[in-house]
Amino acid sequence: MLDNHDHRRIGNRLDLFHFQEEAPGMAFWHPRGFAVLAQLEDAVRREMRRQQIREVRTPQLMRVPVWEASGHWSHFREYMFAVDDEPPAALKPVSCPAHLMMARRMALSYRELPLRIGEIGLVHRNEQSGALHGLLRLRQFSQDDGHILCAPEHVVDEVARFCQRLHAFYAAFDLKIASVGFSSRPEDRVGSDAEWDEAERTLAEAAERAGLSCIDQPGEGAFYGPKLEFVLVDRFDRQWQCGTIQLDLAMPARFDVSYVDEHGERKRPALLHRAVLGSLERFLGMVLESYAGALPPWLAPEQVLIVPIAAAQEPYAREVAEALCDAGLRARLDARNESLSRKVVLAHEEGFPFVAVVGKREARDGSVALRKRDGSQEVLPLEGARAALLSECEPPL
Image 1 (cartoon, helix red, strand yellow):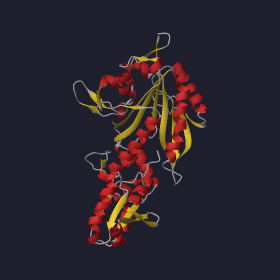
Image 2 (cartoon, rainbow, N blue to C red):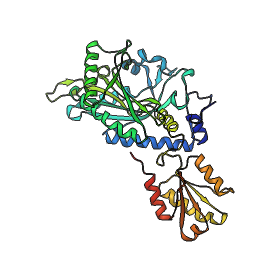
Image 3 (cartoon, one colour):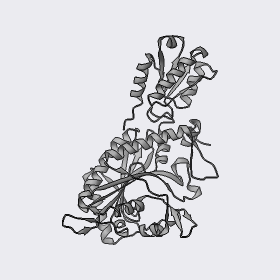
Image 4 (cartoon, rainbow, N blue to C red):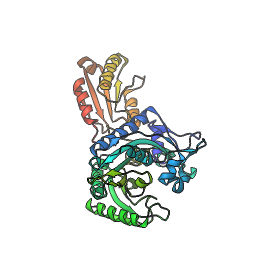
């Protein structure tokens, strides 16, 4: 029995997504759910631009030598989907190898560093069936997978810069950073002890520069480097592990990525793996539960329901719907033969933050009666209502 705040129940009530046995651990996104996911992607893209990350797109399927070079075939193989082909290949669980192959083709100079590239891309991980849990644990999900190649002396500034941006981003979802974990070298790893010593020292310095007080998590680092992991707390005081930044001094050499320094010498860059959300679907599951489905207007699947009181007002209600949709709002007309009170109740159940009621007076005056979730109401000219709704639905990010 699912709790009313469980994101799977909310997703069903709001008609956002569903799951089927034919695709375990992979969501079927309905139009309303895809609208929410798209808004989240847009927010991530805006944040990437603020961080001067240039977006790329890379292949889903790559041959096994790529994964052998990255170390995933030896250290992450059990979580990968291999494809029987000749030669064999695998679906990507991460985007870093593809980004490094792209960087190798650029023949980098120190003047082009830091190189910041990112991808909102689908990844696949062969999670055990017993570990699957709605949007919170999937086999196919979208990752805001970003990578920064920089000179070793710039790592501290780049990490601090990333960390300082996180508070404002999470605050837009009423989420706060509760703690930061410092995950150090695991037993199963690549790279020399000297590289790990340097990576851990540098990442610790960066965390201090960013004003972070970290909780030690021995042995919890990625197989290629130590990482900072950001744990969020929601409105119910529940904790969620979310954003991360990882310092990798091993993988650039494994893909022969280098840059020419100011003296004309070839040097290895440091690689930072960064993600504000990690899995967009998992983050959305968190947010759905935190808001109990009543998403803020900018993120709501649909923002305005237009309700004519009687059939005579339906033509004007259609004009209102068209005007709001033309303005870029996610609006829908409800012309069903139901009472006004019933339509308003259904609108709240379906997650609409606003209901625009059109009666005889509104049709005559060219206005709408705009109702909010809290029950407040005001009558505005159509143009005023459109302006007010655009302001209320403006993304905070």
